[in-house]
Image (cartoon, rainbow, N blue to C red; front, side, top):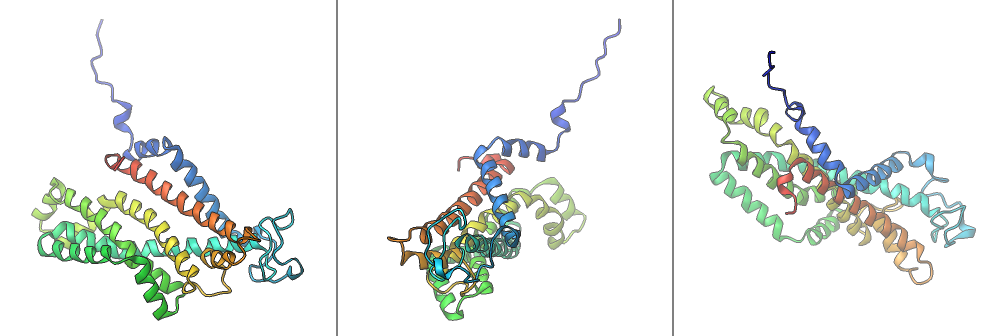
Length: 295
C-alpha cells in the first residue's frame, strides 16, 4: 500500500489577509453596531427629501411653534414653526459632508508629508515633525474660532480648518508605516534597479500604507464634525438658514428648561454620530493592524 505523502495545503495559507482582517472586524461587536448606525445615518442624509415631511426651512407649522414631540412631528416643532425631525435629518447632511470632505483633505495633506518624513528621514523628518508639534500645541478650537471669525465661516472655511488640524494623525500613521517598510527587500530592489525616490514612494510605500490611511481617514471624520458643531454653536460656522446640529443646540439652549427637545435631540444626534464613527474607526484600526490593539 502506497502512502500519499503529498503535503496538504493549509486553508489558512490560501486566504487573503483581508479575510483575516474582516474576521477580526466582525468579531468586534461594538464596531459592527457602530458601522450599522453610521450606515443608517448616511442613508438618512442621502435620502432626506424622501423621509421627511417638509423642506427644512419651510415654516409650515407656525401655529404649533414649540410643540412637543408627537406622532405627527416626531421631534416636535421649533420656535419658527419648522419640523424639527426634518432639520435634524438635514443637519446630518451638513455634518457628514463636512466630516468626509475634511477627512479627504486631511489625507491629501497628511499622506505626502508622512511619506516624505518616513522615507527621507534626516532634516526632512525633523522639519515635518516640528510642524506637527506646532499644530499639536495650538488648541484647534481657538485657532478655528479666529480663522472662522476672519473668514465669516461657511462650508469651505470649516472644511479647510478641520483639514489643517486633521492631517497630523494621518501624517504620523503614514510616517510610521513608511519607516517600517523602507528597509524591506522590495524597496531595496527597486532602488537597486534605479527607481527614483518618488517612484518608490508612489508605487511601493504608499500602497503598502493603505491600512493606516483608511484608519486615519475614518478617525478624522468625527474630529471635523465636532469642530463644525462647535463653530456653528458659536455662530461662526455654516450660516443660517442651513440647518446644522451646532446651530440648533445653540438655539435650543435658550428654551432648555421649558422645551427640552430643542436642545436634546440635536445634541443626541451629534453624540451618536461621533460615537459611532469613533467606534467604527477604532474597530477598523484593530482589524487592519492588530498590533495596535489596546494602545
